Image 1 (spheres, rainbow, N blue to C red):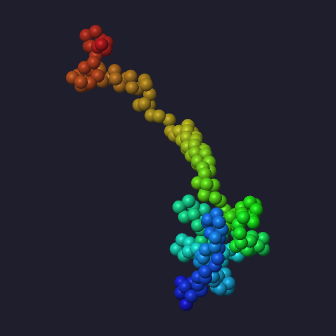
Image 2 (image 1 turned 120 degrees about the vertical axis):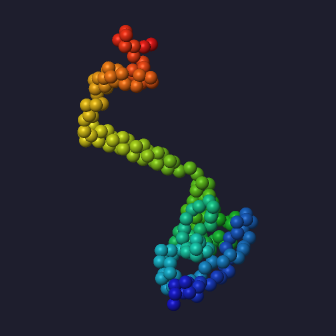
Amino acid sequence: MALCSLRALAVKRVAVNVRSLSANASKSAASVVQIDPKLRDELYPKTGNRDIVGYGINGYPMYFDRVGMPFPSIRFRANTPDVLQLREKEKGDWRKLSLEEKKAVYRSSFRMTLSEVSAPSGDWKLVLGCGFGVLGACALFYWALKYYLSPPLPMTCTPEWREASFKRAIDMRQDPVTGYAAQYDYEKNKWKN
């Protein structure tokens, strides 16, 4: 059988009482995915002993913290005896739970709160530092190539050669209308002002 047809046969949704998001701790029914354990290990080997509580991206259970999709498809922590005991307690009255137990219940399902997800992380400093490091390395590499590997400039680029070529153009009276010869006074033997 194809993998997708196995997945379709193995998954059935069962209504389970879970806590609601309201303060009065009323019960509501939400669907939790129930899969045969052998088939679950074959289809989803990386989920471990965590509950699949949603559809996920393209039907694959994975955990991620994102503001745009605040409810991941699997719980953050595995089902340990402590977590299972807290989940049984949360089915009752939430006023009987201590603040630490409420936080532990939340942290068993989610790694971070939405304010922690959207908080600035400071990663821009690392990116900026790496960018300046790369620019510095490129500048150092360019300097090394220029200083050690480039051949010396030809003699036509020296100031003496340039001055001699200007003098030769003036002596030959090259381009007397708009060139160098037009700016030179041949009677006084100096440049015009």
